[in-house]
Length: 80
Image 1 (cartoon, helix red, strand yellow):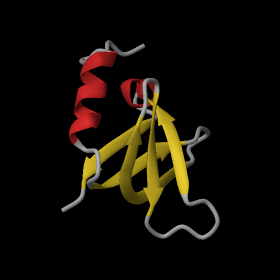
Image 2 (spheres, rainbow, N blue to C red):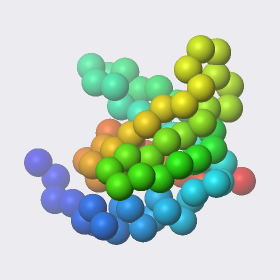
Image 3 (tube, rainbow, N blue to C red):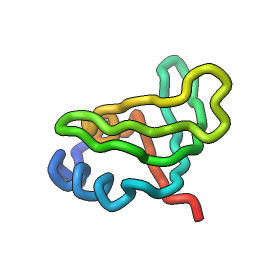
């Protein structure tokens, strides 16, 4: 198990800085399945955040918890 370099409150603060901005996401869905998404980080709630996908075919929004980011299952980068 890897030691976390950030705690949950630091993850929330970093995601709060990205609200309303266009981001790239890499989501680990398990069993070597990694999916890439692009979209706008739209809403931030107490325990989850919502991303509106740019090239959505059926699903327009996806939500993730801050612990997903903390453990490395979801990686978020600002796209410029």
